[in-house]
Length: 51
Image 1 (cartoon, helix red, strand yellow):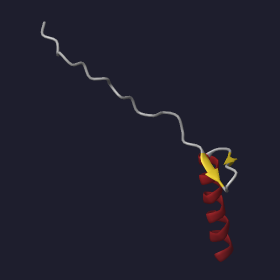
Image 2 (cartoon, helix red, strand yellow):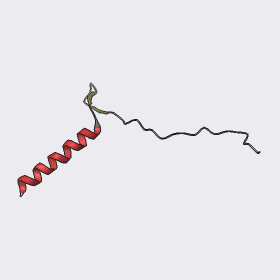
Image 3 (cartoon, helix red, strand yellow):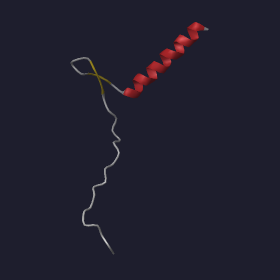
Image 4 (tube, rainbow, N blue to C red):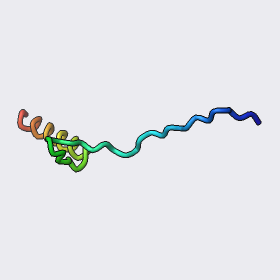
């Protein structure tokens, strides 16, 4: 069987989530998904008030 002379390394996709930083001191937001969830709920609250 023929094999290549130079074997390339397979680069895998990053599965770990990136942390979101805020302010100079890098105060961490617990989870980016939680923040998104809060934004969605806030949007729903505003929509209800406007009705």
